[in-house]
Length: 404
Ligand code: PMP
Image 1 (spheres, rainbow, N blue to C red):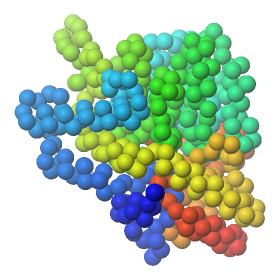
Image 2 (tube, protein in one colour; image 1 turned 90 degrees about the vertical axis):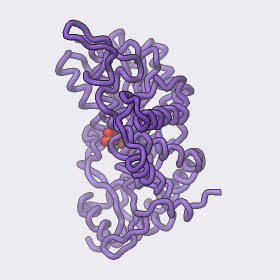
Image 3 (cartoon, rainbow, N blue to C red; image 1 turned 30 degrees about the vertical axis):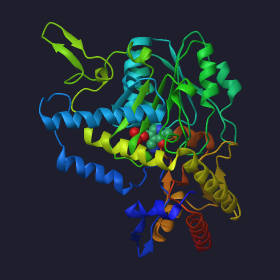
């Protein structure tokens, strides 16, 4: 049974008030709140284990290294990767994508080559490609979508050419909530001999992701969006690909030997992890993954889907409501505008009622251009949100609407 009250008790922040009102936190797409066990993992390790990993013979260093590498194994299991060599720790999705773009672009792309992205990408899966385009003269092809917010698969298939080197697509849109059929899209790309990088920032927290079932070549996500700490993320890559890619950053950890004449790089996964990693953060991330695994991703998904369907029904009853993103397969994100009320005004007034939502372009300005708007109000759900909170959101919007 999904015991929502018990789950909520695990998150101390949910007990607090803002402006004298109980906090209703609906900005989970930006970041999630942390269960006590995750914060405890951080303090426990700082208080009793802390030492730099990989380099020490002493007891604490070895213990910290064991924790860090056990966390890598936890991530491997969570994604069902084949080997923990395929799990690269990064600062988050953004760094994971920058790593991939830089290393893959360096090794496999030259002037005139093409990357396929979608119109609903977050800036972090657009700008690094544009920077590569400026350096190397590659070009960026864009998969369009229909008005429901679904990528046009026929158009996608037509974008491939003999210059296509990689596809980089989000699994779930952080604005529309659309769950893209990445498994099928990967199969199409593979039929052309093209690898695929999936941005999993908005999928990993909400559904079971099996990188081997998807056959993804690369998969990126952020710890802080799945109840883990800030500053830690993951790039999964198939070992056969990662072996072929050059390092992203140079420094300690990523080398085997260094002389002024020649440096030999370390093996996977360390080749991509220059410098002291956030080993406390990786422990806490593993604790977060254990936490959601204990509840079970399928149960979390069912709860959030139910909440999303309910919220869509309730929101649509509000006069002048415009919802952006009505894909058949939609996850825990709802973007909307009401009449002529500016998204910022709506967000600010909801905040005064204790309701935290996000407003603006959500780092997806090309998508805003496609929708012909400047921004939206976005409510995004997590495992601890309730129908009562959705009701409060709906009542809050009604109140703001009547004020205008
Ligand atoms: N991609 C998507 C789809 C996102 O929603 C986000 C975060 N809003 C990112 C990438 C970037 O994640 P981070 O800021 O954690 O690197």
